[in-house]
Each structure stands twice: as structure tokens, then as C-alpha cells.
Amino acid sequence: MIRLAKQIIPKKTPVPEQLPAERIKNYDEVIQGYTTEQAMAEANRCLGCGRPLCIAGCPVNVNIPAFLNLVARGDFRGAVNLIKETNSLPAVTGRVCPQEQQCEGRCALSKRFESVAIGRLERFVADWEATRSSTLTPEIPPPTGNKVAIVGSGPAGLTVAADLAKKGHQVTIFEALHEAGGVLVYGIPEFRLPKVIVRREVENVCRLGVKLVKDFVVGSASTLDELLEEYDAIFLGTGAGLPWFLNLTGENLNGVYSANEYLTRANLMKAYLFPEYDTPIVRGRRVATIGGGNVALDSARTALRLGAEESIIVYRRSRAEMPARIEEIHHAEQEGVRFELLTTPVSFYGDQNNWVKEIECVRNELGEPDTSGRRRPMPIKDSNFRIPVDVVVLAIGQSPNPLIPKTTPDLRISKNGVIVIDNETGKTSKKGVFAGGDVATGGATVILAMGQGKIAAKAIDLYLKTGQW
Ligand code: FAD
Image 1 (cartoon, rainbow, N blue to C red):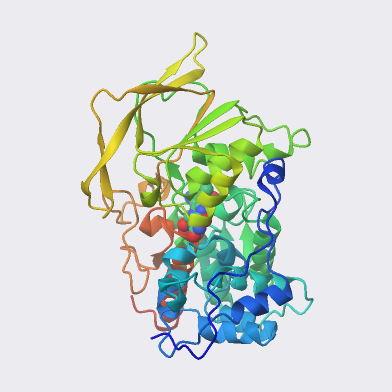
Image 2 (cartoon, rainbow, N blue to C red):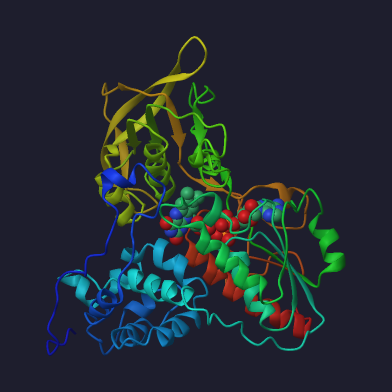
């Protein structure tokens, strides 16, 4: 129950942001973060509920009321240390977690007013720490002699690597790309998550003695069985990097990208830094992105920054069903992204040189909820219309790459291609091999990948100590 003794401040303390007209001309971070005074004022809005629900709303159960209390008193060191007991990447999660569905969605204030800005405060203390030199490397116990291979350096792999290194195990991360961080570097754009933050987190993990081997594709350069000859246990955190397609006529026209390719070219290969980086990417005047999640919103906003005059989201349900973070939808609207809602593409048309020129779409109405719990889009008869385009980005979902399962016959995968794990331990069907994150859930969230990493790290440690599977 809300205690009324404390004066309720109904709205979140506003956070400084770049203005929309300015920010679409650059790739710098949109939200600039709280000042010390703003952070303390915002933390003071917490009601200090007797039975706080926000903790259960956080997938890694950060003690939110206690950290807010420390921020309100100006003890930022205490606050960041408290968060890091359960969340090793607060500068990342503070920026990208869907807080409205998690901690902030459960905040007692949110029933009648705006919730406490928990994400912005998490980010504030993490950034505060980064500007202080005393980012301490924890003491590491003597080496256990056990060797662990981590495949993939996204949030799941980094979490497992850090937790096991802190237990004295010798950890090596194998990463297919030339930069570590997974989706945090190749997917989520700089204007939402500056790469300097990801690099800092990777360095922190390496400072624990973790070895990082880049440009190494497990399943090709080495199979899991070959790795098991050298390592006592393996964690697979290979994510869900295989894009889905619509299987529509014209989908293979020039100018049609998967979001995965479009964002990798823009972010990891730095197409946004042209002419310093001359990465090929088609900079259309009219760009349509198909989908309604974070990946779609990131693509549509990237298109604007690459010079598109018109960036359009084509989404088959209504705004209320969009899976993207509310803040991203809001920012995209402010920046002028046009939303064609309740709309499904049915065909793509090209010119004589096979460059995409039009999308044919149908309008939908919403029917009964489907298995996802969201109302099903139902096409309206004779509602076909066309949208002129130069570039199309498909952001309709992704699943794990089948390379490792294909080269590891005794690794069980489900019908939709995810690796089957025991949710309590992260154990796969293969002895000594654990998995977690998007490779086990399908495309999900950073904090869920980290949460599964924590569970697997604990189980790997136990397995190494007891040898019991
Ligand atoms: P990944 O981050 O996918 O990392 C997997 C790593 O494994 C990659 O580096 C890959 O190169 C490597 N790898 C793959 N196969 C091999 C191999 N065979 N050998 C060696 N290495 C390999 N989540 C949020 O919570 N909030 C957001 O706002 C958000 N926005 C997103 C925006 C985009 C554009 C995308 C694509 C995703 C977004 N997500 C967001 C989802 C989130 O990023 C993922 O859920 C999360 O990164 C999954 O972490 P992971 O460690 O399981 O895998």
C-alpha cells in the first residue's frame, strides 16, 4: 500500500536529451543522463514501500529500494557496488532494459503516477563510477587448474566469463567477430548505447584474467568436441544472429536488407562515419523497416541518421502491441519516423535493374489474441496499397545460427532451432556443455541473457568442483 507520509512527486525528473532536429544529424547518444542533483531528486521520489514489488520485476533481482536510498543520500559508490552484486553491466542495462515491463512497471507509483526512473538512476551511478579511477579489480582466488571455454562474447558470455574467473577458473572466450560485445556492439546503435561503454565492460572482464580470442568461429575453426579435449567445460552464448525473412516475392531485390546486415554495416563496420569509413551501404531516400521491436526501431532511426528523407515503420499490429521499448517508440516519433500500423507487406516490386521500388501492403484489423497473448492481425479485404521505397529493412525476428548444432550431433535443439537447456543449470544434452542467453531463448533481452549466464556460471563451478553431471 502507498504510504502517504511522503510527498508524492507525480512525474519523473526530466532527463536532458539532444533535440530531435539536431540528433538525427549525428550518431551521439540521445539521452545525456542526470546531473548529481537531478539523480538525488529522482531517487527521493521512491516511496520506500514496505513490500517492494520492483525487486521481483527485475530479472536479476537488484535490491532497487536500497540502491535508490543510497543515491538519494549521495552515496553513489555504495549504490553502484550494491547493484553490481547481482548485475555486472549496469551502464548497459540502465540504458537498454525494457524497464516499463520490469522494475518500473511494478513500482507502486506507476499505478497512478509516473514510476521512479530506475533505469536512468542505474545508468547514472554506473556512469559516475566510470569517471572515477577507483574501478577496482576484485581479488581473484588462486587458480583451480580448471579450463573453461566460452563461445560468444555477448552479455551472456561476458557474465559467465566474469563469474568463473572470479572463482579462479582459467577462462577463454572465443568470438567469431573482430570485436567483443555481441549485439551490444554490432546491433544496438551508438546513439542508444555508446561503444566506449561496451569496450569498458569487456576490458573489465579481461582484467580478471579472461583470455579473449577474436575472429574464431566455433563449429568451423574448431568443433565443440575438439574444444572439449582441451577444456573441462564449455558455455555456449552464441546468441540468435540468424535473421528471419518473409518469403515474399521480390524479397531478394537489391536494396532489401535484413536488419542484422543493415545494423552491422552501420554500427560495427561504421558506415555512419563516412567518408572516414567507406563501408558500402545503400542510403535510400525512402527507407521502410518491417517490424515493431527494438531491432526495427533501431533500423528506422539509423536510416534517418544515414540521410533518409523518410523513414517508415511498417508493423502488422497497433502501437499498443509493439514489442519495442516505449522510450524508443517515443524517440522515433519525435525524430519523424512515420508509422504505418496495422499493415502487412505482401510483395516487393523492383525496377528494370532489380532495385526495390515499392512495397505492396494490406491493412489489418485486430482479431482475438493469438498464442503470444497479443491480438492477431486480420487482413482487411481489398485494402491493398503501395508504399514507394528505395531501401527495405526486414526486422521481423531472428533465431540461433545452426552452425554449432550441425557440427555437434549430440547437442539437442528444439523445433525452432534454440539449444535445449535445463533452466535451473543451463546444462545442455551434451556432458560438459552449458548454454544460455538468446541461443537458448530465441531473441530476448540483455538482462535475461545475463540472468541465464549467472545461473550457468554457478552450475559450471559446481560441475568443475564435483565432476557430477
Ligand atoms: P549476443 O549478444 O547475440 O552475442 C552472441 C555472440 O556470439 C556474438 O558476438 C556472436 O558473434 C558470437 N558467436 C555466434 N556464433 C559464434 C560461433 N560459432 N563462434 C564464436 N562466436 C560466435 N535487448 C534489450 O534488453 N534492450 C534493447 O533495447 C535491445 N535492443 C536490441 C536491438 C537490436 C538491434 C538487437 C539485434 C537486439 C536487441 N536486444 C535488446 C536484444 C539483446 O541484445 C539480446 O537479447 C542479447 O544481446 C543476447 O545476448 P547473448 O549474449 O545471448 O547473445
